[in-house]
Image (cartoon, rainbow, N blue to C red):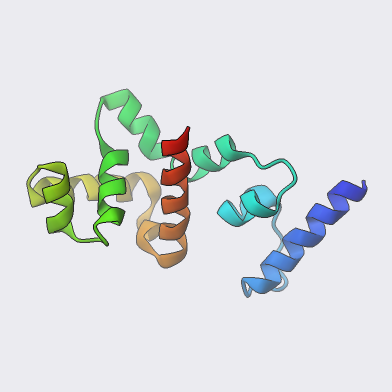
Length: 127
């Protein structure tokens, strides 16, 4: 019980710091922040929740969407630099990013979500 109480308090503190006073969420629902403050540090769960749909698609279809996402963020969101890095046409980058958007949801490029995805990509690479 004491461990659960400490984690609940850390989650409540994180929600307040995020401007979500009055909301409720467990560590597993706080994305990478939950990964940092939670007791169990569920890296596989975090990866599945944030990057899973793209990685699963790549595995099923033999595509390179994860690599495209890494290159896109590495290029600062530049389509031309991403295409150059991957040695593909800019239109191909656009098509892949559209597919990523359909898999991850429209908000995948929002600052908070992009940060979470970049962290997930680094953890994915380390695994």
